[in-house]
Image 1 (cartoon, rainbow, N blue to C red):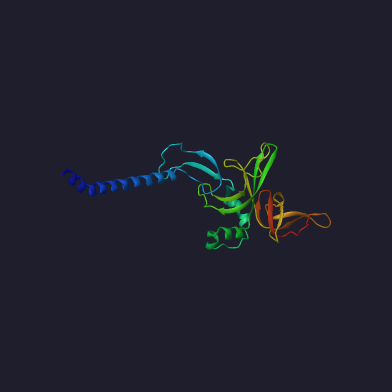
Image 2: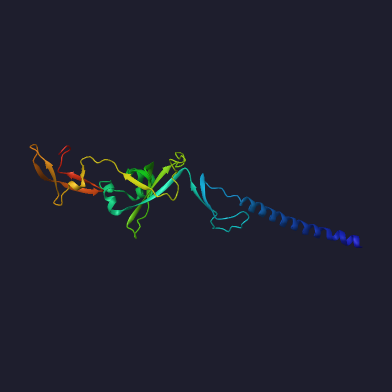
Length: 232
């Protein structure tokens, strides 16, 4: 009788064991998935600046593991005052909304060239750069961040004489635009308050010639008309 009861319970026990096996298999698959997620790979070649997690630490979704900077390009955001941009932007073709949303079209329309420099003791270190984009205007400082990129900033580095361009360096960014036919550059100090410029005539006599002023930048002034190339 006991043997018959044991035989009758076999299907039930088998069903219980199969369910237990399925549960253990699910737990094993979940553990394997968790283990696979313990390996984090950056989507680019980079340099680890800082770590925010330790070995064995449980990390939740959205938490920062590390700060990694790409080594194929270093980006530099340089804020330029709105007033200083008038010279670079003057005479540019009107940009459409599509131009502003397409990086390549925007870069081509502006045509800027860039250079990044580090002023070290007794020397200046320079990197050729490429204009990338313009970020939103900062209302508090009335500046526009122009972002330029230096490709492969570690390749030209040399211990003791040329550092790599790493985050945190205080550098200067110089933007230059295309030449403009029909304009003339003179020292800013030569432009008088009444819109005239002192010149010498053929008899070496001093005269004051009226000119059409375009804009000033730094220690130079740009004229639209009024002087010919080679005027003394």
